[in-house]
Length: 319
Ligand SMILES: [Zn+2]
Image 1 (cartoon, rainbow, N blue to C red):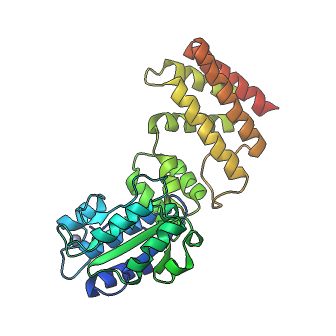
Image 2: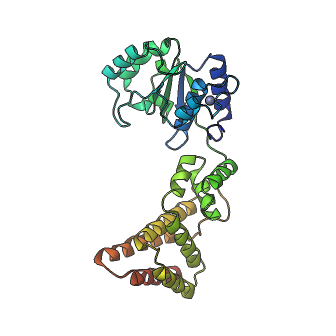
Image 3: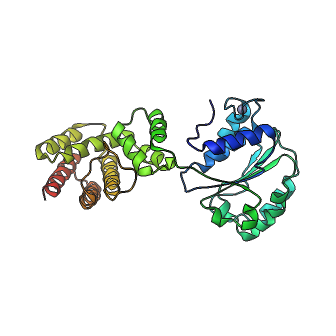
């Protein structure tokens, strides 16, 4: 099985072709917002290039593919010291020397700049000579939130790709497989709100699953505007030994913020998601969660916290 990179068919085909022919994509620039899959694309290209398989690259099973996918292949070099600092010109000078040294284990070596925007103009200029004519068996991959952050002289030497947004059906299938235990409506909401940026959906769905499920079920009860059912729900929560009121309130607040975003028209349109209360009301309910969460700091008992929550929700939803 190969690296799970959704969408981006044209990129995958180009990466495989370049890896098999040994031609093209010596310098590759990939642009896209955070969470759009740039790093996965880089891992895909790196495994394709370093793959030990003769016919299919990347094969996804050989040692080189597995090392590249895990981000630990010794011939994939990340010149950035950390992710938020400008790469020094000295570091580029070291790189210029290093580029002429043979790869450690594979046929080629790859310099991967995960945040190429932290290469300032000076650094990019220092790289230019290498990018013009990379030494034999050397490739460069530059990731950036936007190509406009790179110098035209750098771009003119590169093959450019934009991380594609993932179509809703493909995102849904991927996330269902990744989170088989998550409630369907939550997965659908994540898909809608991510607007094709899969990393965002992953962020929404990771985190504490248990409390999130409980919070979602509580919200569904709230959406029925049935005061009696709400008190029953808070009673059940206070008797549930596995329930952590802080985590529950955080999860509840998060879902309400999603619901508010949803009501504001962000994400894809669709049915069967987090309950809707309207933008203002969802935001007001989220505020209630933050307010009630502070009760815990002054040692109010969880049972009273849950009851207070239901009372506030009931009166807000009635108004
Ligand atoms: Zn392989």
